[in-house]
Each structure stands twice: as structure tokens, then as C-alpha cells.
Length: 481
Ligand code: NAD
Image (cartoon, rainbow, N blue to C red):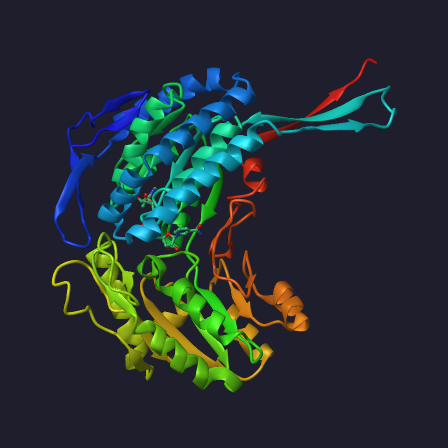
């Protein structure tokens, strides 16, 4: 069993309970991890609360240095971490390597910001005597970071790095489906001499997450995961008014205009949908293509889809094939297949895929799938599809494209393919999403704030803006001058 990290020590659950972690490509048990109960959660939060009193006083330079040493160790162990990602989550080696690199970049980005935190000086009217105002930034205290299954490293970094840079301490909880990579980080946190209790890792499922959120010493919760879980987290955080950011599901539209660079649009539509076997919050999940280019676009798209070859992530396919790994769980594959069946029952036309592949024989694989013109109230249009199914519709005007794109409860990302500045200006204003890419793939940059609107959540991760959520700003008036 791989142990948790509490107060700088590797620990099992006091109850002795464990959770098995499967390799989704082989269905074999990889390892087991503790299933933390309320007592373990309490130990972790108490450790974070004790550590906070010291960590908040540590020079920003030193906090930055600790984050950098940790980043260096992650770089030195990149191969092992990438392999762990592939084993437990299923993503191909190349994608896993990209995730490790993104994680390191985020650590370095926030290490740089740790020394650039500024408050405000404000001259005030002298109605009550000469005075001035200041806004001082105080770290919030004990934070909780709850991480989903699809990007176990990147989405740990988006919480851990700004929290520590701002002087907070944190208790992290990975998904029970993909906890192993985060537990490998635990060993590196000890090696990087991050003081005991500053970062703690507890493992478990929903009950462990709920115990963390309800713990009275927790002040701030950074959650990434599904919209359903996000709703529950809001409820649990409400009684004590805990600060919450929610990075939730998405159903990103991709609009391809008549003047689009079709080659680029096809290539990125494929990456945007089939990266990580379609398990991306930011995946391009609904494709709207203008009449004028529809036939050419779809035939190039189908040529591209044929190149994807389902298989184990640690083996490279023969060129020009592209590896697509399994879904992370059997439950997820069954859900995606139900959503697809609903589209077909409603009259959608299956253009490619639609079934688990014949090989590999084991594992939660699904052939990349394209379905044309499913009903607009079908599940692939109305729900988030967290797997490799791409619905495509024809549109005849920009008004129609924007209306269809916005016809979803989600509002995470969106993209448009055009060089027409009038269209760019319109979609920048009118697409209901936290982010719009123009002639680019759906990708989150550390430098730019990222977060959803509508039922994709609220609050920002990435960018300088993410730091705002790790401080309580306090106004101070100084009089008697
Ligand atoms: P999930 O909601 O099932 O689980 C996410 C995390 O929440 C896990 O650690 C899980 O153990 C924990 N959890 C579950 N129930 C809980 C509860 N009641 N209280 C506290 N914690 C609880 O999500 P998932 O299947 O792991 O991830 C996929 C979802 O995450 C998709 O909807 C995807 O779009 C979304 N996501 C969003 C972003 C974003 O930045 N907006 C990024 C990645 C993934």
C-alpha cells in the first residue's frame, strides 16, 4: 500500500481501510491506497493549521525557493511521474510527459509570483482628521485542494503552487481513481524539505472529501471536478461561509467559419476532442461547421480520425498512427456509450467508431467516434460528454453558430476558426464562456486566468488572478497623523 502524507510523515488510514487502484488499460490492480476517515482528515488539517502559523511568517524569497527546489525534483523524476500517470490514468506517454512539463511550469510561475505580492496605499479625505488607507493581503489559512481524475498532476499544481506562494498551507485530495501520482509527489515534497504540514495528502473518495470541506479549521476550498460534485461542495461550504472556487465540467463549442484554415481546424478539432481519450474539461465537445466548408471539413476529419489507434499508453504506435488510451473507468465508458446511443436513437448518423475496439481485448477503450447531426436536445448536445465522441452539426450563419454554441448549461471554453476580425470581435463578446480561442486549440496557459461561467463554476485558476483567491484583503485606516 502507498501511504498518505500527514505532518511530514507517510501514514496509513487509522481504520486500516484501503482502496484498490486499477490500470484502466489492463484492468489489473496496480496498488492500493488508504481510505482516509474523519480522524485522518482531522490529523491532516490540524497539521496544516499548525504549519500555517510558521509558514505565513517565512520570507517570500524562501517560499519561492522551496517551490523551485520542489520543481527541480519533479523535473529530475519526470520519467517516473509520467509513467505513473500513464499507468493509473491511461494517457499515452507523450501526453503524460506534457502534463509533467505543464506542472513544473506552473510551480515555477507561482514561485516567481511569491515575491511580487503587493498591497495598496490610499490617501483619504481628512474629514475625520488626516489619515491614509492601506489594503494588506493576508493568507487565508488552511486550504483544501480536491483534484479530479483526468489531470492528476496539472490540477494539483493549480492549487498547491498559488496556495504556498501566498503563505497558506494545504491538504490535497486526489481522485480515488488516480491517487498514485500525487502520492509520488508526497515523497518529493519531503525530499524538497517543504516543512512538515505545509502540504498534506489524504486519499479517499467522496466521504473523505466531505470530511475535509466540513472541517472547521479549513478556510478555503479549491475544487476541480464535475458540476454535480461542485453543487454538493457549495452546499457543504455554505454553513461556515468557506471560500470556494469551482472548476467544473464543460461542453465547449468549436465554430469553423467559411474562411477557416481547414487543415489547422481539422487537426486541432481532433486534438481538442481526442486528447486524453476525450476526458478534458476543455475538450472541444460540440463542432459547428459552416455550410460552405462542411463537406470538405468532415471528410478531412474522418481521414484524421482513422489515424487514431486505441492501445496501451506505454507503447508507441507505428507512424502515422496516433495513440489513444482508455477511459479511466468502466463506469465512464458505459456513460459515454449511453450518451452516444441516445444521439443515434434520436436520428444522429454514425460516421465513425461507436464501439469498444476489438483490440486490446481488456481495458476501458472506446474507438474515437464521430456522429453527425444528432438532435439538439440529445444528450451529446445537452450534457458534458467526457469521452471520445464528437458530434458535428452544420450551421448557415454566425447568428446561428453563436446561438447553438451558447445553448448549453456550461460555459467553460469555446473556439472559433476564422481570420475575419468582425467575427473575432463578435465571438469575444457573445460566446458565453470563460475563455475563447481563435485559431487555436483549447489549452490552459499558466499565464492567463482560467475558469468557467454558468454551470462550469466560478473563480479563476492560473494567472496572477489565481493568487487573489488565496488572500483575504484587509483595509486598514491609519489616523492620528
Ligand atoms: P468528480 O466530480 O467525480 O470527482 C472530482 C473529485 O471530487 C475527486 O477527488 C472525488 O473524490 C471528489 N469528490 C467526489 N464527491 C465528493 C463530495 N461529495 N465531496 C467532496 N469531494 C468529492 O470528477 P472526475 O470524474 O474526477 O473528473 C471529471 C470532471 O472534472 C469532468 O466533469 C470535468 O469536466 C471536470 N474538470 C473540470 C476542470 C476545470 O478546470 N473546469 C478541469 C478538469 C476536469
